[in-house]
Structure formats: structure tokens, C-alpha cells
Length: 210
Image (cartoon, rainbow, N blue to C red):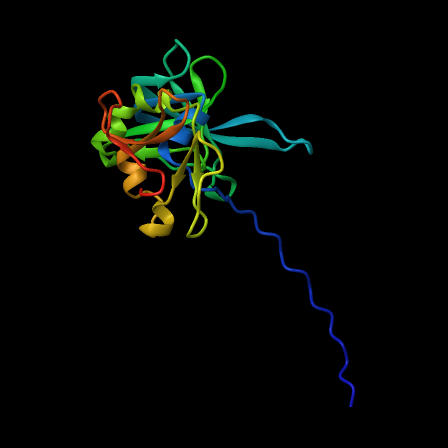
């Protein structure tokens, strides 16, 4: 007997935020603004209308900037994000008790926009190397390219590349290289991993042995 065919309803489309992992140095170099700040207020605001005339909602975080590592000369006073994580909105503690490292895109004077794909971390969770690298080391490496190793073995395809192997070797995105190393340019124009915050000398890490 031939079975009757039943029509299967199409799956409902679900919006989700998807981000590729980035090394903290990459995040710094890609961002317009990188600050250390406390979040002291939060409210939902209208931010224009979409193509159908519906109001676009955003969360406006009021921040007290402690230090700017990269960005405009004016202090950042407001950080905007989408209202829900499905569209990459970021939830921050607005009690004023927690300090954050916040990276994102510059908007109008004194404001920036952030998403879940930006590098945003509680300040206390950063390693000493990461904190110090924000002031100089990461900027020095912005001409270098950090390449994520998708599977082992992997190798660089150009001298200005550094292989990021945390995910493959340590099975976590933010491992030893993310927490303690920067990819910086050497005198011959090539790039290599470097640990520490003093000027690069002989402490480079071979690209093959991270």
C-alpha cells in the first residue's frame, strides 16, 4: 500500500546571535572604542523606526568612564545595545559595583554601541598581561593578523600571521595565548607571539610552538 504524503510545515525562523571567537588583541584592533568603566544606570529608549515604521528599542547604559584605551578625545557617557541577546544585545550589571572592559563601535559624541560579538569582560577577570597590553602592546600588534587554528596540524600562510591554537590545544577559546600573549611585529616585519609587557627581545614564542 502506498502511504499518503503529509505536508510538513516549515520550521519557524528563529533569530539568534552568532559570533566567531576573537583574540582580545583582535577585538582591540577591530574596535573604535575601548574603555574601562562602571555602569551606573540603565533604561530602554526609542532609537528611530524600522522600515515598517515600528519603533526600534535599545538599551542605554549610563557609564562612568575610568580610562580610555582607544577612542575619541571625549569621555564615553552612554553605551547602547540591543534589548535582547537574540539580536546580540548585551546585559551588564548597572548597579555601579562592577567595572568592565568595554569595546565597541563609536556613535555620536560621548556614546558607543556594543553587541555580544564585541569583547566585553568584567575588569577583574582580565589577566595582568591583558590589562597592561591594553595600554600599548595590543596597539603595536594591529598590523599583525591572528589566525585561528581550525584543526591540527595548521600553519601560517604569511609572515605577519600568528596562529591562535587555544581552542584546539586547550579546548577553550580564552586559553594561554588569549590571556597571556600578544602577537607583535618584529624588526624584520614578521609577527610572533610575545609574552610579557616589556619591549620585545628574545622572549618570542615560535609560531609552531604556542
